[in-house]
Amino acid sequence: MARIAFDSRLVQTAVIGSKNSEQPIILPMEPDELEVHRRRHPTYAYYCGIQLGGCGGQLADRLYRDGRVCHFAHHPDPDGTHPVCHRTANGEDSADHLFIKQGVTRWLNKQNIRSKTKLRNLGRGPGDAVDIHLPDTRHRIRFHLTPGLDVSAWRQADEELTEDADTVDWVLTDDSSITRELLSRHGYCLRVRCETDGAERRVHIGAQHPGHPIDWTPLEDCTLTPAGLLTPAVESIRLTRPKPRPVGFLLQGEPVFTVTTSTQAPAFAPSDFTADERQVILADVKPTTDSRVVRAFVSLPRDVPAPTPGNVFRFTGAVRLLVTDSNKLTEAQWALEADKFVRLDAQEARRTGPCTPTVSSPATVNTQKLDRPQQQATPAQVSRQTNDAQPNAKALQPQRSAARSPAVAGLHKALKRVAELGSTTTWESLIGMVGLDVAHLAGPMRRNLLVAVDDPVSDAYPLLSVLIRERNSQDLSYMGTILKMHGLQIPGGEETLRRWCARERERAYAFYGNPQRTMPPRLGAGPVEAQPREQPGRQARSKGVLESSLGRLEERILEAQLVLEETRHQERRRQLAKTIKNAQGAVSSYRRALKQGTAYMKWLGGNSKSPRDYEVDLQGAIKAARAARSSRKKRTQRPG
Image 1 (tube, rainbow, N blue to C red):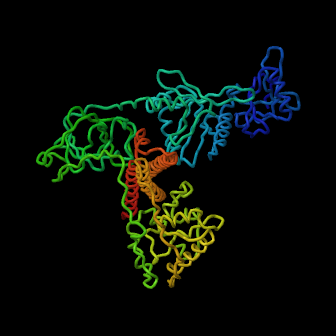
Image 2: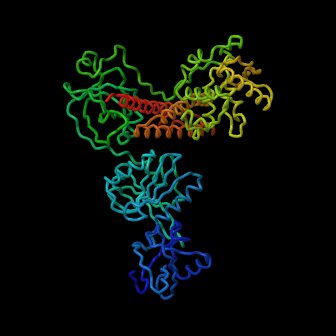
Image 3: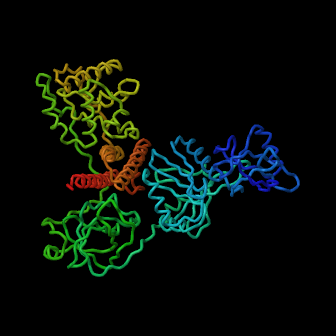
């Protein structure tokens, strides 16, 4: 073994406890500070850690008062010589990857956020990168700590990181081509650095944007939102910075087009040209009279009335062909930008247009953001059949479930199976049966889902919602609320409700059992008496509209979650999950507004999207996912 006479390396960092430890330390360089540290931690053992790229040997701290810097040194071998160590990074920043992992983990734990943290060796050493995976929000944070990453390698790494995540925050140490790429895409770039504080290094997150110095914020003052890692400076940039205009080229001629879907922006439209002042539609475009029709995204000014389906239009003025990343979610690979268009008359449309226009007049653009609440039948209007005319379960079930959404129908089918087995279940057990991740469903969403499963209520059918119980085998805590929403009032207290639910389970076992048996009669449950109330004011009416819209949005979220479980197309699965997450965040915001008594119309004035908008987004993403699944089935069934 090669030997050296003395250890001349000024090693500033080590790990505590063992050679495989990930607990870093930086040795205080001032003698007085090192003496204080020794008194505080007399039992610490230091190692040239494997995760530092070191040899694993034990280190000793060296204190000097002659002007030299205090540092670590390797323990000598038994013969008095020092071991050979090929560690290349010894300075105060040589353990920053361990300090970042430690600091971020501590920060997330304080917020009770579940995470998985991993050190990555990308070819240069164990400190190349730190990956943070947040499975509950399908988000990742990559701290890239080595220089030299080019755009090609960055794209490949980004694709790998998004295999199990919807979004990735890149946090970089150096100013590189990737920094400039992120600046051009988002208008800002996240940076990271560590500052020495005693025997530790504190993590700081920087916000870099063009023409300004980097704004540094301690990690503890940053926030983690569904949109990603934010610093106060990043929030300000996102709010004030105009979205950059994408690169484009003028298109010759005056193309004609027709709208293919609703006038709402598709949920899967490219994000790099959906500026706040513009709207995006999906259209069939015919660039010239002798060219074929192509499907394309079209960016139009938001203050221009959207073109209506069933008509043919011609662009007037400049039309730009936009350069954007390919979108794998639809067959549309082109994007156009225009400011003006005119509707063609029927004769001209038939001659040049991509479709035959409708005879009826064009539909009027509806600028009202709120939908009118749908009229629902009152409990008194629901016809109640008697047990003397008990129907056959399998014969009549299709009529009852014909109008159910896929989410409700899936849960209804699973609960029927539970009833056939004469058993009960829990929300957690239903994950495997339905494919619905109920862990992320709030209590009101679960309640509304069960109400939809049993609606409309009739004495001829048992309630299936009573088959779901808590983990402690007790009835659901909100079962009484469910019954009231059905228009049923159970007289008495908790014991009466418990007996009522037990009888309803007996009825379910009899009705859905094999063979089917005669159901015992339902225990007494009278209709809920209408309570006199004052005429609702404007704020109350607004809240009622919001509640109605939220109910439909929550049901659409449940449907989307079911579709997500069956989707195998990676890109469409990723987009659907992202759309679900956005809708869930919106529901939380709307519920919070209701709870705080905020008038809906006033509150919505500061927001760009209503519950209906999020519902349309979900419909588009669901449609795209189902189309991918249908295409996949056709390919697998193709002979040969």
